[in-house]
Length: 265
Image (tube, rainbow, N blue to C red; front, side, top):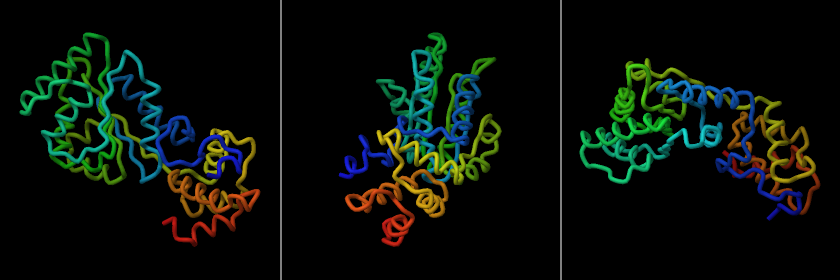
């Protein structure tokens, strides 16, 4: 409703994992580089962790775009709250295997055949598990066992685990799995200068020809959000709504009003 007033063609601060609005901060660039390295070098398993709202899912979407093509067979599990057998069945579904067996033995046989076929067809198999902190210990053990699909010189599958920091502690309890995670990275929130660049970037991507946030407003956003992209988006979006039709620029007073209104926690 405020797009035309502020000069936007798209909503600049939507909280959806849209790769077109991905801001390549230094931490996000490093995380993306490590994920690409993990799959291109067939490292078996990689872990990307970070607080809620730090941009893990969006980063994974950008990652998939970067490696997409005939050389990759990608499956994404976004709701891993399943028992071990259901989890393995979901792996087959997400890899677009039409017939999914009921028993674990048959499931693993079908998966092994598919991974082998992909290797013969010069395709890399990649499984991305989002919200991986929700995996049970039993399902994490299944993840470890999937890494047993190997040839003498390579893994047949690369698994990317995305999750909140508590995932790290869960994995530490499964020592054999922890030892198999070759690449890991903790995605940190933005600092102040990155927050400023992020707010400017999102506005430009939305079609604006000017910045409508004062520096003091962005500093207030940073202070309250701690540099987490999701919270930054929430604050900025509501500030644009409150300032709509009455203001020419978003000030720190408007940010303060948003915070005191109780809509942002």
